[in-house]
Image (cartoon, rainbow, N blue to C red; front, side):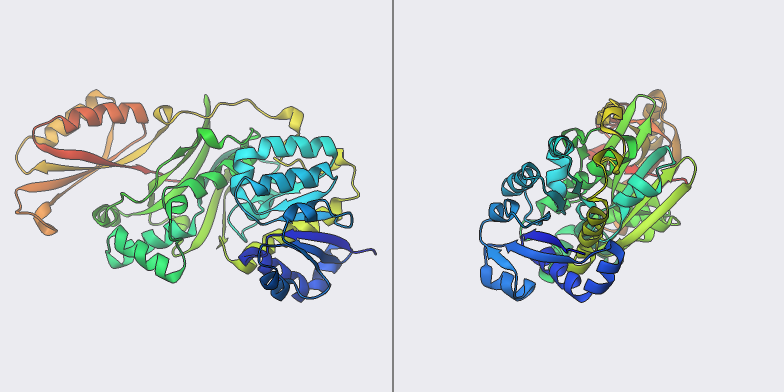
Length: 440
């Protein structure tokens, strides 16, 4: 059969990996897709570098819009990143009646509603498996594999840079700044790591998964973000003593009054499989009412793992290109006319468990004051741990008090902490981390 012609926009790490895997596995891919898939044209700023990666016989351009408008291209693959040129390329391709495959989580999380609506009007597909968790097929699992289920919650370790840093801090007892420098030296963290360590990358991915899980529009602007840059090694140590590990966890959960959508450093029981996902690896845990808890684990980034997801989308689009648009799998799993208007809950209304660390004068009555304030706020204590600060620093006149709570509403916790911090015996701000049991 006539090959499907692909236009590759962006021939960097993932683009190069896509070209490599397409060439290496061309026969296997054609057998699965029903016809060959070949790169017909590519766009990149550095044309010589692009030629090395895509090989001979591919038209090269330094303007990605030329690829989007190319008359011989069937599917445009957008691997540029960002939301400026990439958005223009995607919308131009859609206007030209071309299908789109993208690995751009920022673009989908922030402009997906607009892009999907335009694609629906033009009768074309926009596939984005590679936008979330690299080579892990989590989009397909949520959108198709779990379609019989009412999804209850999704929790994910979906940023490899942050997971590497937290793993090293735990294993070596090192400070955040030292491990970040090591991650940058190894190439796991960018020179400006803000996007990863402050939770933006994870929140983009979580926003997309939340939309598919619950049939709501993508709403990145309503996600709660809290990064790991202020996390201290002592809290990782105390968490371990209590049987927990700290991960940068994205959580989206269906509640009676709306949807939780939040990314923050979170304690997870060490016995949970997801708590043992270390280094740069990713994992997503999904709880469905019929299937129970299912775990998806693998490489969350890298040239060929991400290329695997890109090419899986190319194969899907190729298979479905001749199908009537009304019979294709919807972009966000639910039919556009059946999307829910469930609100994203503000963080003050979210209910979860908490880890609290207080630095206090080591004298009688302090614990009684703290537990009284928590009780008055309706907050139940699950566990208490007290350690003299002299074990790590100081003169032994102060102590760290660690409190684990049962379920509590964020605004109630914050009100109680304000009263605790006003006590004469308490020094400075209370460290507050969230805790998820992730019971399957």
